[in-house]
Image (cartoon, rainbow, N blue to C red; front, top):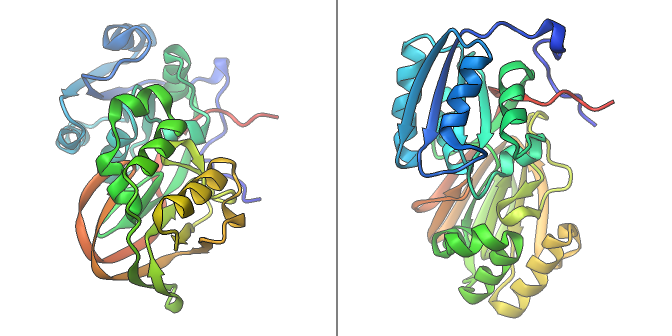
Length: 312
């Protein structure tokens, strides 16, 4: 097992690092604990010397605020929202030395969950201010970074169709239910090259790239994935139709992806995918456009994230 990269020892109560300029980039429609008022109070009480405050109505508005915070000299950027907000902010922070603290206020908080960041506001704030700093990998698909996963084909169509309210209430069950309701699973000629070598050439309905183990819908798709191992997990599915996908999603939800006859999984650093027809692709639960070609790679140590101390 790969040892996590830590920039400095985890500080205890007596050695808490000083708090300088802290930027909050918040999705104002997301709720968490006592809300943004509690967050502001907590940060002032914690001794934040300079507080930069930005609220956005949509996650796609976040990158502009992150860039503004960096120009103003933020020492730490706190992201209030779900995976969509985290993805947008991580994409902007990639390559900088400014750490990101995650305050999981969304309905989907898979990156935070994979890192052990709790849905408890006081504890999440403590981790953001005084937790250990880890340099973590990001994936990059067609020029945009992702933290959890990306995918194309059936997965992209599913993300686009998923009902947010149902998903928020039922989580993994809703994801599978939505998949089976909207299943098309059209097979398309797909060619995949991994690290310069041909890996798959045939009919496929879905291609996935994972940076962590648990992906959209809370499904444990990639058992061996780690966000600090310098590689991405790559999966391709040949499932077609409701029966095939019911079997596939059922095994994925049970954590047995490798047992599915419709799934192949490998690991790599650079991936090229070519589809015979344009397919919708998504990053961290956010649907993008359609494309016939995907250029994917891992970016090792791309972003520094505030994480809980390791358990003994």
